Image (spheres, one colour):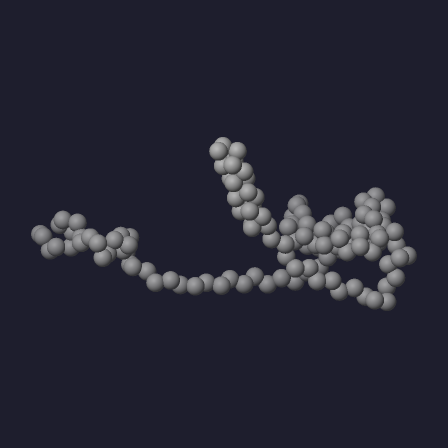
Length: 127
């Protein structure tokens, strides 16, 4: 019984964790006239344009992974010390916020409205 319960719990946990995994879509636009076979290695500029301050941004990290996958598919290897091809990024982003209002019952205790009246003495005109 315990092993079956443990197995069910493990399957449920793995399904929940895999449901949280998300990979953004990556689109590649490469110049067909460039012969990448002449290059054997690539690297990144020491300070990327997408980095702000003293840290590597999440955008830079995502772009590095996407570029590495594409160059790996073309046979280029990452070389931090002496790359033949240096890569930098420029990205123009726009933040969009989408807000949606929902109806409110009103007041701090509005969720109690259909079930309870005001507490004794509140709003009853006692003076």
